Amino acid sequence: MHQVCALRWCTVSLLIIATLLSMVVLPAALAAEPTPTPAVAAARDENLAGPLIGLSLAMASSALAVGIALGLRRRIDEIGEEGDAHRQE
Image (cartoon, rainbow, N blue to C red):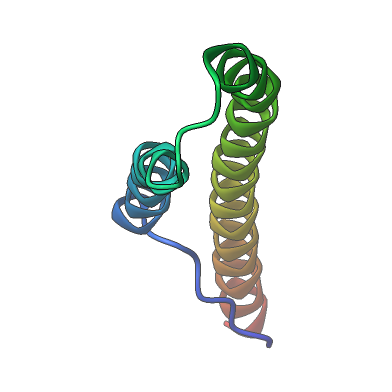
């Protein structure tokens, strides 16, 4: 039977932490550019806030969904193997 390696919760939490850290590092990298006029800087910050938050939430939710799906798949395989063992006896 096909064996699936499920992500452990610590791996999923590390993926979420990496996503949150990227949210901190990305604005700092953007701030290293030459500072434009205050009106342009305010417009750019307003334009980037929504997409960055949306992207990070999408990454975190997809990492969580993959972890749950792989965990369920592993549990289904374990239940199937238990049933096969009982039938053979």
